[in-house]
Amino acid sequence: MNPTYPYPFIDRILITPEEIETRVRFLGKKITEDYRDSEQLLLLGLLRGSVVFITDLMRHINRPITMDFMSVSSYAGAQTSGFVRIDSDHKTNIYGWDVILIDDIVDSGLTLHTVRKLLLDRKPRTLRTCALLDKTEKHQIDIPLDYFGFQIPDEFVVGYGLDIDEKGRNLPYIASVSLEKYRSVIKN
Ligand code: PRP
Image (cartoon, rainbow, N blue to C red; front, side):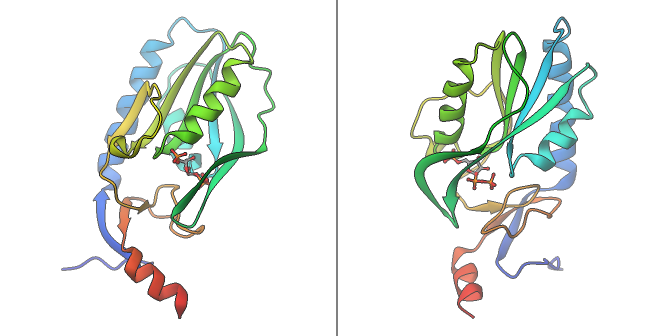
């Protein structure tokens, strides 16, 4: 039986809620171990896509943490503009902190690359990167990804924080989008 999707443009489920939960739990445990000696650990999420991921992940990190966000954007619909705009900056002074920069997905790698460079100039004690999804074959820039959830093929995906034109963030799974169906939906 086909599941009923709340959006007509969903093609199929790629990663189930159970698979996400297991992997996020694993990442939380790994981060807990890696930062057992850290005094100041900051989870720095990129709005808005990382919100669901970071709020789940933080509950599996058994260490004192601080959470902060930056708002950046580079996409309109399914296309990257190739330019990363910083819409609002983080509030914490990260000098001397152990920072984990967290995003929902690495696609071209431009966003993480740009923000990482900016943060390094602010002299954190350490800086690592973490993304739930990684589209390895789409990378245009070589970026170090220290923690990742899943490597996925080059398909447009929504759910668990990820969107297409702000739709689909609320889905509890990662689903692929039929761009053909999506275009016919927005035309009508
Ligand atoms: C998306 C996503 C990543 C970025 C990845 O952000 O959340 O931040 O694109 O793409 P890249 O590796 O090609 O740079 P978007 O600008 O769509 O904003 P959002 O987080 O609000 O969805």
